[in-house]
Image (cartoon, rainbow, N blue to C red):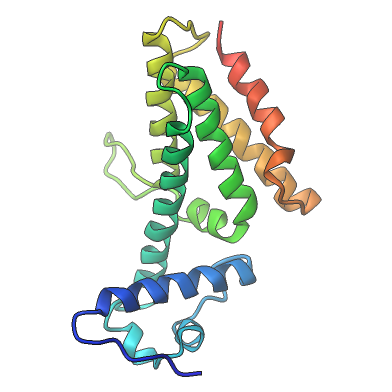
Length: 200
């Protein structure tokens, strides 16, 4: 079916629809390998040429989708953190990592996209950037607030964030690859134990 043409000035709406359709296809395909401009255009109900008005090629579409999905993840982590009392700094860390695991378990294709595009190429001696590194930064800030509130850690906040992130990622990957199960409740007890272990 064709799509209703945007009125003048509604190009951003079309861009959002393109990214939403690409996200749905990514979920169906389980990864970005089968994601094509033609397939996304068909899903939106537009001509492929219309996509090129927003994304110059497939690589730029994938990059736009990566940014879009990371924004979803970051927002879910922020919302989860803010659902806890500001004084419950440990609870806020747990809420963030629960939100991260829920996103990863419920969106395996999107999560694999983030892993495949995990860090930018950088000059030696400079810090890489990428969605999953941003997640570690968010967790590091959370552990820093724990220390400021008087909760002693066994390691530095940055190391605590890395330990919890890597452990959570490994648990998610196990369920994705070996067990083919997707419920967030499968990993939450494990990551709660990880969080507990980094505190003295």
